[in-house]
Amino acid sequence: MRPDGIATRIVLAALAVVAVALAILGIGVMRVGAETFMRLMAAAGESAEAAGAMFQSSVTGIVLVAAIVAVVVALVLGSFLARRIARPIERLAEAAQRTAEGDLRATTPVEGPAEIRALANAFNVMVDRLAEQDAVRREFVVNASHELRTPLTNLQGYLEALRDGVLPPDPSTFDSLREEVDRLTRLAASLDLLAGAGDERPMPEDLDLGALVRSAVELTGPSFARRSIAVDTSIAPAIVVHARGDELAQVVSNLLQNAIRYTPASGKVRVTVERGVGDAVVRVANSGSEIPAEDLPRVWERFFRVERSRDRASGGAGIGLAIVKRLVEEAGGRVGATSEAGVTTFWFSLPS
Image 1 (tube, one colour):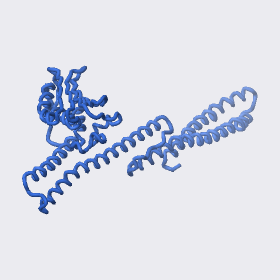
Image 2: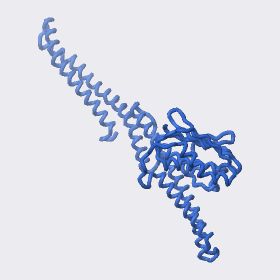
Image 3: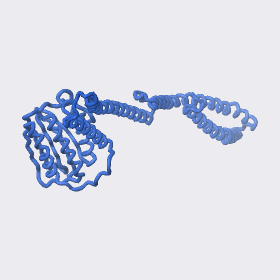
Image 4: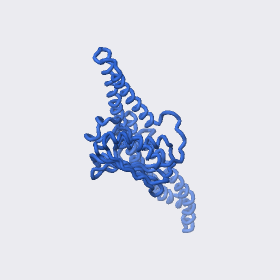
């Protein structure tokens, strides 16, 4: 045990308690008990000297033996309890030190009294969350790097070709360069939105949800038509929500663009707005390849894509649904997704 450790302090505290108890007991026995003993022995005809000698030889010896036994027991029990309490605290401190040094696998055993077990459980949960966040951060950095590298590589190729005279400096070449710049600009704006950066946001207001969704569908109508995608709408009237208009329009636009991107040519998309219990629900369902059940909870993560049918070749940056989730939840709503029987549905709800 360390001289300044909690175990030493517990043992010293136990000894202090025993010392106080023995002092009280000693005073009681040696003073009050002695007087009572002497009085009783005098009443029995014994002299004061004989009674005093008898008391000293019997009671005093017993008190001394009891004191020694009490000190030994206090040391043993105090040491046991001190180790039981100090060991898990020391292990917890060691795990915390390793975590501070960057080891996110430094969990601690759950042992000791109930309070220390609760503390160890909380620490282990915290370490697990830190490890999860670190993994998400690493994945985000890798994916963001990839998304930035692709248009930058294209720009570099175009510029080198223009410099070497391989490509002529005609409008079509500059249009291609502008497309790559626009792609980088949209990606930067999306990342700013996910990070909460940007200009001051307007205050929420009462909005006609049906009219907003109908307008978004009309704006994306040409994109659906180019791929011969049939769009069916079912919009309940007079549904009012309290939200930021521009952000809600972006939510609906992102879901529609997602449907355009992943619905096969000549497929079907159905957009519905309906009143729920205390809320309004918007659903965008599209035909096409299903999303595996194990991937559904992750479609709202930044840069996550389902393999094969939903990949970078489809043209998205993989953060549209993450933006939808952020904006809807900030407005007090919820998001969800289902995918079965050849139909994938993304939905969100807002208080109404």
